[in-house]
Image (cartoon, rainbow, N blue to C red):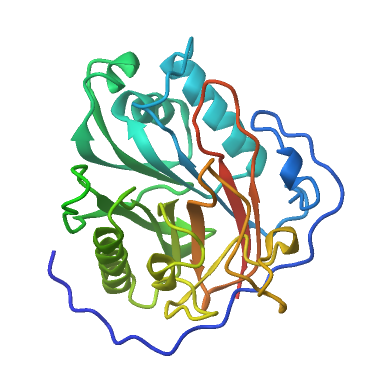
Length: 304
């Protein structure tokens, strides 16, 4: 899809969020990790726009004893508990997507297959495609998708999926991507392509951009999205004011940091356009057995 890219403005301010909630919250499915206990985000007090992102590890993880319906029930329960507006999934097999789509009411789905995984997705059904999915709590969405530049060090095709639909009545672009897990130059080229394509699709619309970026908060790849501390993007990230995870060089209100979402560090992000959102909050939830090697990341924000 050839769409002209709008001009890039100067780096945006970080998105503000309220102080961390001190009271502990017992979740119904995804537990609170011990590392996260000092920064609990309460479903009862968080801002109203609610987002989840999750690398489902659909093909690579064993998911021992977990049926498609079991998996979908777990995700649905987490969505209900968080009153989720937009859910963004990576590494999700089609059988998982279909099971969740068939369970959810009141959500419009979007799906983008990027590959097949015959020896991993077969446990979810006969359709062994694997890709990304977005669910938005609205009547309908317009699906937008694009392939990302090939990475010679990573044979897995990578892509970008967006669903244009109303979030709390406001037309919004809810997007998900999954960048290469190796090859720094190739991953950076993909990050630049994501930035350009989302800008082109969004125009002046609010943007929620989430997924597995396979990059650290302070990296050239995430500099394409953060709007502070050397970043040239137009986004804040939901966990940017969690002081428990500030690096030594962070002394202000915001920091390009956040809770670990994978054994390799913080790889999963929920970015929101700083012109449209404020008061962000974020939490990386504890792992649920037989689900994924990633933590579910949840975020919340208020309209600017």
